[in-house]
Length: 418
Image (cartoon, rainbow, N blue to C red; front, side, top):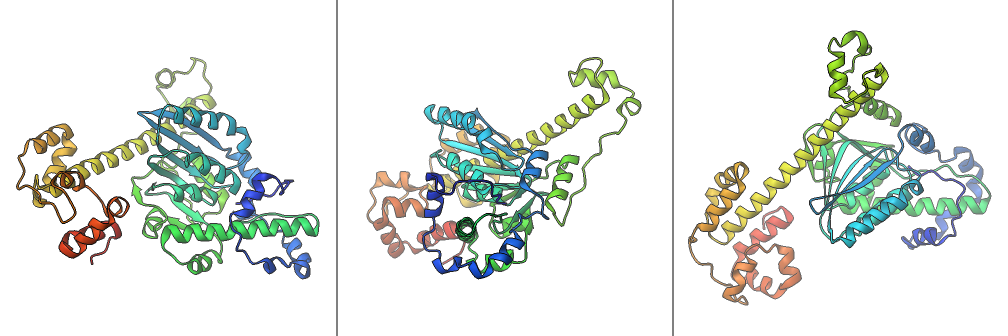
């Protein structure tokens, strides 16, 4: 979603945006004969005509950054709008994280999208981290928010979440020169989005164009994963009344139902009112409205905890699998022991690792041509990318001398057997 306001398109920032795609055909922007038609159409923003300013007023952007276990945890919720309200504090926090040596970032997104330039600024900040960049999506990741998601190394989404992409759109007005400049910028951004989606999914740009030419493209989390917009699906997130209202506001064709309704009259429906007030740490004279707000907040936080825990479980299993696979390559254990060792590791990772480490090994690995014996242990965990970057000649030798090993590397990297 791309709202155009009274903006000077000749600032250094906008010059940089224009420069991002210089191959746009100049004659595309001959709009004089179509000026009246375009002006009447007004290029209204998407989401059933809802103005981004109205959306932001109802669902304001909240972006936070906290440090946890040497990982920068970023949360992005609400409509992407008025970046200036958050930019200074957020940037200062990122500066501090990087100064402290933090390289990895974990991002949570639950947003209907918004201003493409706000999305670009957030992406710029996230790309400053030099380590892994992982993401989790809540109930909705739509419009410009999808661009943040696809820039991350991995992005998983709640099973009941929805992913929506569409053409950037805008509302333009003014003189011929202003309209021409605005349309040129809009076409540049449209081309960039199409190229980004194509590169992420493997779809051709023509396929992306065909899909979004019909309007908003809504995908379930599983559909987004299957089409490679995201990398995985995790368990369901809570659907609150506010979340349902947001889906209605953005025009989703599949509005989810609220998981559990909060009683309308807490004063008469809750016989243990005083106990609930105490548990929520509210004053004894708390009103029904205050209690209801506290319950909603607690429900929301519970959903967030579940999402974080699910991600932690996924990361734990991945680390255990990588450890066991490395042990198999190093011939410490056999492939048919893999599942049992992973199960053991999930129950007690330290015990499993100690057990594998204590093993003498089935046989000593032998070096391939071009490798020293000392290199074998180091290269046991190398991927195809590692060989391409660090020793492509050894990869050539492997392809000739050890085609089976070479084939496994390619299968692991591309997902297909040679």
